[in-house]
Image (cartoon, rainbow, N blue to C red; front, side, top):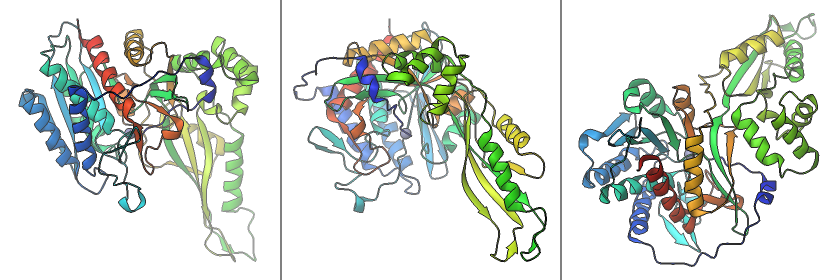
Length: 464
Ligand SMILES: [Zn+2]
């Protein structure tokens, strides 16, 4: 996943002059990272192509050749894919380890549809093109090459730095769940930093707008509401009817509003955005940040489709199927209700609420096995270190906590009790946000800036 915060009004937070980025030849570190990046893009690591293990082999070779002991490199095969854990041992003086996450798989890309080969890194007009350039092989390349660079410099971290690369984030997230369930000892950590979340936004003119650090994710869950009925001939309509009963139940779901909720991230987001959001919306954000029980603010935010999900769980009907013939009474009627659950709320609690609302005679079933996660606390040490690292590439840009409305594999780490922060190092324009789409690309300068960012961040968190 790669979802960025899109809040155009945040541009007003910062009126800075455009930095003049003169094209300079890549440094040796940049050239090495670029070579790794190119190699990673060359593997089609989409589900079904079976190339994640080949890419893992390549990465294992890099770490081994750089002097990482084989005992500190772990590969966990799972079906056609795998995950990779690489420990950079520290002296322990700085505390518990830090996990550094990214995923090695990509969303499928059909070369027929692309202007350039999706599995060749192409540099053109100031951009790197290729599947995974932004989601999230830039993260895999940056973290790997930063490890190699630090190792070559003889850096000894004050705490273990542990790379955790998963192999199916875009589909099942089974490798993530396998790591959390079966290799929890390797993941023992103070917190995790996820390259596949957070990141910076650029104005269309290239000026930095804001940087968002992702501290929470809503839980995605589908529920099926089903009504059964004996049915019969439609010329003899019964008093009860599966479709009418389901329709009544759905009207109750529509009318129900889940309780207002907030966490540190909600308040920090509204405080930052409230300063610059226009008119009544800005006023409501400011009022909510000051007092989340302010009824007028809650009402104003709840009326805005882009805001309501930020302060509560939402559930909405998205699909229907019912009946089996035009001239028969329906024997069953089913609706899918899609919920985005506020961090910290259990999936079963939402199911119970839906049951209470729709009453007897309507089955409420959870689809698949959604996992809920808590919001990670806004840790000042993490926020400060990320802010300092962001400022090495874009001085003064505002760093704003962010709760994502979707989910990445960070959710399993949060659910396992590891605070997780999406802190990707890339600044990108909204118009260049083509993750999962055709002609995915990132600015060349953004990739090299991201390298500097990760280097600064790791030295800050695990240096002296
Ligand atoms: Zn991703």
